[in-house]
Amino acid sequence: MSDIIKLLPDSVANQIAAGEVIQRPASVIKELVENAVDAGATDISVTVVDAGKTLIQVADNGSGMSDLDARMAFERHATSKIRDVSDLFKLHSMGFRGEALPSICAISEVELKTRAKGSAIGTRLVIEASKVKSQEAAVAETGTVISVKRLFFNVPARRRFLKSDRVEESNIMREFERLALVNNHLRMSIDTGTHRVELRGGTLRQRIEDIWKGQLKKEQLLPVEMDTPIVKISGFVARPEYARRQNPLQYMIVNGRNMRHPYFHKAVMSCYQSLIAQGTQPCYFLVFEVDPAQIDVNIHPTKNEIKFENEQQIWPLLASAVKTSLGRYSAVPSIDFNSDAIEVRPLSPGEMPEAPTMGFKSNYNPFQSARMHLGGESPIVRREPEKRVDTDWESLYTAREAEGGIAPMCLQFALKYIVTTTAEGLMVIDQHRAHLKILYSEYLERNTHSEVVSRRLMFPETVVLDMSQQAALGEVEADLVRYGFALEYQQDNEWQVTAIPAQLQQHDVKEVLLRILDSITEDSVNYGNEQRPQDTMHRQISLVMARSTAIRRGVRLSQKEMEEIIAKLFSLPDPALTPNGNPVFITLTPEQLAKMM
Image 1 (cartoon, rainbow, N blue to C red):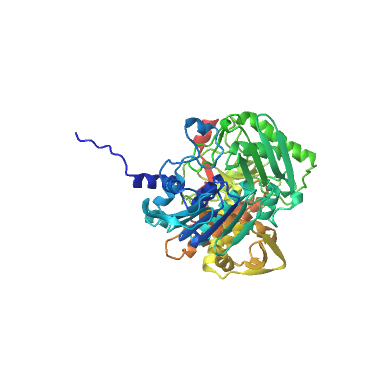
Image 2 (image 1 turned 90 degrees about the vertical axis):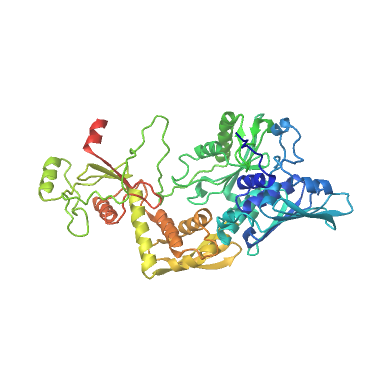
């Protein structure tokens, strides 16, 4: 039998590594900026052309590299950050794997110009798809300038999966925000062609104000300070009255590195319990300083998922620090009388789910039955709510069944579900999902096949957009106009909404607009050189509008409102699922109920 196991060529191995490390242009910027930080730079500038597909250039005034170091930097697992395995447990640098630069040059054309401090002349190195094309002496400033051109030129499948320029630019700006926040002491700038931002070096508070000017004011942020042998925690949390329904600014930094940590996030959220309206979240900017030997950053190629050795001990310290800050500065929340954004809470250990998961068909309609009365457009018989509390349910059911249909009362349970009966059994309908599905269908139908009716606002709404949201606005502005929105640029990052779709209420404007812009970054798709299908954007905007205006869980419904929801829901061709595929209702048969008893 012949041998079949072979070593992969370096070019293939580099492309595999690139698939993990470099997902999009924003990933390239992250890796290059972090390298500049490790090189001791105090001034870092980023230039982007065509959302990074044509050019990404990062220039710094760091230590620079010698001729040999410039060449070795592009070899796999070549690094100046660590020497042996013990160094993994005392990391002080952003990078350490030696994978970023070889991954980048495997999927692009790279030009490097660098000069080490004290050297009279620098080096210019050109690499294309991992192959060195040239290396020569060159005039260069102290530091490093690295240019990444034609990203994914040799991986066309990956390039096709990139989103539109506006979406990729929005992701770039969001990544730049994270990098700028964690390196607040450095002077940093970025120029994308459509946006230019220059940030001074300063304190964390100054950097927050510079990045999100207009969105966050000094009085909104409360300082957090705690110093213990286990962890030092500093930063800021927002007052409860400034909690957001959409786009909360939530950042955690450990030892100069951005991190995602759901466990610590829950610790912060626990401090705001009963202080903020349900469905809202606070902003926070928290910095952790711990012994590098007590954390593990070598979990994921992006190095954003971090494991703490003492996370169970840090939880109460973090909660105490946040609670102390809220108490010390008398952060008493205001009452939100308009809040109805009540979401389903997480289940406690051992708690039964609120509704069992059942199988169903997407086009199933329980009211399409020979026993059901289908006269008119409504699948149930309209009637006024019963006033008597001692109704003879058996007689009522028998009488209506004899009439040829079933029109039982609808009951609301836990202010979340509509409970009724059908020929198949007991039906439980999620009121929020049902209304969402109804509104989504109406918005989509109205804005696809009908003329849009726009309503001018007597008092225009001012909306403040961050850098990534402004980039996303360029992608969706024409579609917003098609839907009935009218926006006028004011100054800096402020826009004024002067008209909205007729079906929206004015108090929904900011939430709907911000949700649409945020959804562009996460959900939209680029279709190569073709124009984005209009139908795709219509569906996306219709879904956002429906989510923002649908009846929330926790709202009390009248008998008439419940019947109207049921009637409209089951007039749709596919009532069983929301646009995202979540079940709208479940039906429990008599046999299933018998097994539960």
